[in-house]
Length: 402
Image (cartoon, rainbow, N blue to C red; front, top):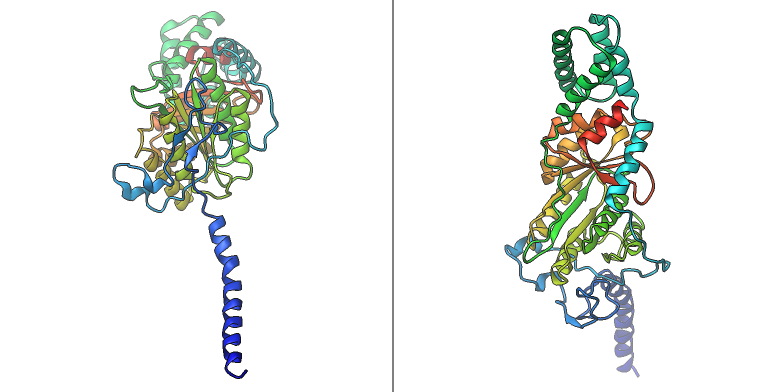
């Protein structure tokens, strides 16, 4: 009996230790989610044409071949569950054609943003245009968020033309102002979205910006624009920190029949999700992969480094063709600081201005373009699903002066 007692005590001690380890091991394992070995019919990313063919898929990011693989080290493998998992089944919608939404948005802009134009026309149509009038013109432009340098440029040009013209009628003044504003907004800028599929890969777009500007909503609305243009689109939910962001994006995609690559693990590696989205887009030969990223303050160095990493990792598979910075137009000049930093980190190619209705000042379009040398490509003027449209210089100026 004395010989058995030490053995029993040893076994008991081992069980106690093992009992403490098991929960730890289970917890660690729970946080490591990998791709399934095969792709089945429930996978949201199916081959073009809706085929349900089963296809082998590597077990982890590290298994894949990519140039300079060192940059992929440390990426967490991420799961791509059913695109519509946990979502209410809703019918697929047909987005409005782009031409129709442009007309509607222009009408809305006329109603909400013509204070600047009316003020300038009233001032320049005065019987006597003296220094006081020019001071008021300058003040009106600055209050409209045009910025100091563009304001001086416009005032100097108008001064010279009014002086040369001599007598003026309201029609002549409006024509002068229209011509100078169009020059300032710059119709020579290329506002085309780079969404044409390449020979061997899709066009890749990243959408970035600070918290609360409406990036996920913008991605969803832009997906509708592209679907209306008969593009085959795939969404990547790389905003892995905001609660329910992936589900929100998947819902937008579901409404127009667009699949979403996402992870169900809170705080999953955003670079890994973005990488898998592009990989899926290449595998399935889609036209455009759109990657939604988490909002981040421009003065948070760690978060901006993470955004740089997302872009770098994606480029192991495919060049990023378009990086759209979403800005809230109501923030005015404050948005310029955001724009500068984001442009330095990820090389912005275009601006999306949301909330251009209401309290926004139309001059911010000029200020941003002058600051970055990057065009405003899209504008949002409301909360509706189709309230996003390509930016048109002449239509914008005419709305201001109507």
